[in-house]
Amino acid sequence: MTTQRKKEAYATAGVDIDAAGRAKELIKQHTRSTVTPKVLSDIGFFNGLFELKGYREPVLVSSTDGVGTKLKIAIALDKHDTIGMDLVNHCVNDILPSGAEPLFFLDYIGTGKLFPDQVSDIVKGMAQACRDVGCALIGGETAEMPGVYVLGDYDIVGFIVGAVEKGNIPDVKSIKVGDTVIGIPSSGLHTNGYSLVRKVFGIGTASEARARLNISHAELGCTLGEELLKPHRCYYRQLKPLLPKIKGMAHITGGGLLDNIPRSLPSGLYVHIRKGSWKILPIFEMIQKQGDINEQEMYRVFNMGIGMVIFCSLREADGLLASLPGAKVIGEVVKGDGQVIID
Image (cartoon, rainbow, N blue to C red; front, side, top):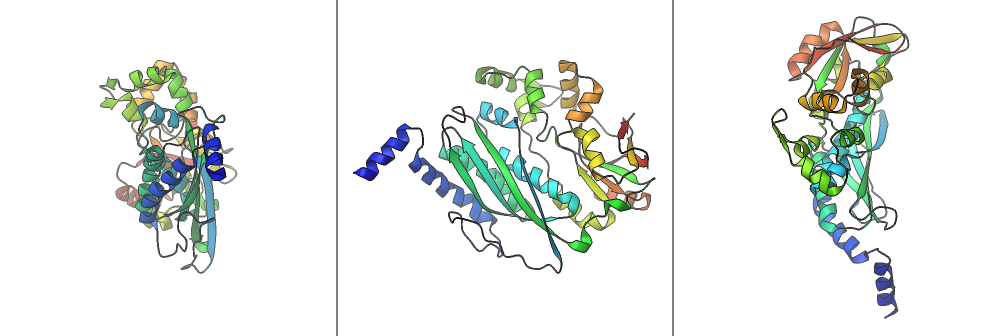
């Protein structure tokens, strides 16, 4: 009787232990599909066990990230099966510039009220993205916190660990004047700039959001909501076999082309990007026009249709382009002060 009263008391405070239990059972159905022989534990234990083997001089590479206010679009449309894909793909791309193979992934889901089917959809997307790159979804945490999150809202965070042979880490110090800059297409906004996008399109209250997101736009070929929920593209499978030919990479996330490219440049170099060398996606043209946003800010907030930039020697450029459908030479490395010039 005492235990039952405690359970009821906790439920009246807004935390449903039974719902958490149901969510964990649904989650297990997805996570077990990502298990590899190196995983030595099951979901539900206090931690995740992963056996690191197959490397001579392994270097562990880690990263953590979220998906920002793209979540508000998923919540408004009650579509949660791609937001987990965004999270995993973003994290995989972030460790890729070090040449890392993704080993295992963990997630955190915080919510005001736990809906097991909603959580299951989120994790389903994570599991699919993990399977696509051979990464184990080894564990996570689901927290129901009424009073911290507004009813209906949630947040997700991902944590990834990868590994690379020490001798195979791309040497960005080898990037030099005259090297080629190649841009690989994005699928759209990926996971950045959504706070500005929501302001530009007047996506405020839930009812406003649903109405505006369900409008079809001829230039997009779909509804605004479908465009904004396109999953963040993952580049690992494409680039893994090409790593020996690549000197460096820059994942174009928050900060756009202007802030992310310099993160991979040695001191004393900058990049000259040529406008018109790739097609700007219609969604970015819509955002700029409707929001009356200056061009410089567009290139600093959004990826503008380029999700990953790679640096290579002029000699390797043609071979890389032939192996990367849609990729374009977008500029070159020149001597300078570590900035990006777009003209």
